[in-house]
Length: 269
Image 1 (cartoon, rainbow, N blue to C red):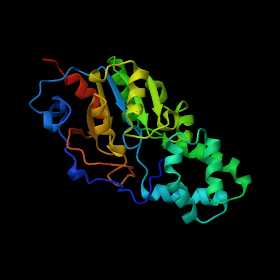
Image 2 (cartoon, helix red, strand yellow):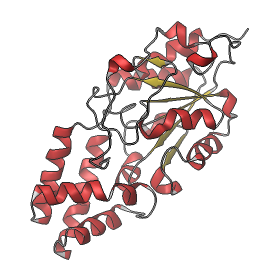
Image 3 (cartoon, rainbow, N blue to C red):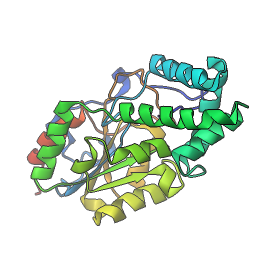
């Protein structure tokens, strides 16, 4: 589960996003390049996870999870939520390598009894499984992309509990590769994350489309890595939590479910 620092801007109004019909996204990677020739049809798509494939958590969900952490460690929800926020980077950038290490880190940060580690580890695993629940409509869209020969990868700022829960999720069988920040040792928009996803897929960046809701400056990072990028409206609504979000002047589509239509309509000149 992603808990950004409380000082981070959480969301961008949907009215500020340039959401275009699918046919309008076919020219290049941003509005600044509308006069460019049509780019080749992508043979691979790299997708963000939270806010893109699964709903970004809301403040209400964040508070409810913090309350469960607090109950497990026998302390106040305020202390638990502060510990989760303050440990975001350590949980996502590779400093902590397993769910057990995350649980021990949170227990120590909260000065809670060491006996709480096992129960907290179980809670982290349970919440991770819940966070990876996915809509049936999205699963159908991903299957359609794969049926069309498109290679898929997920690239996510994720903590070890999410990475460990991934293989048991309904999403995992539909992806050729999964790259998590806690495994690479860097968070978005670090170049090595995008490089790791491209290497895992074995594709050229020029033939790859990146799709995400914009957290972590991921869209500009993908373009710097040589990919085209398209923004998707945040799954879970505009008030879903996002870390490191920046303004995006480029193209956007309403939802991941629009990707099959986008790629099927893509034509080379």
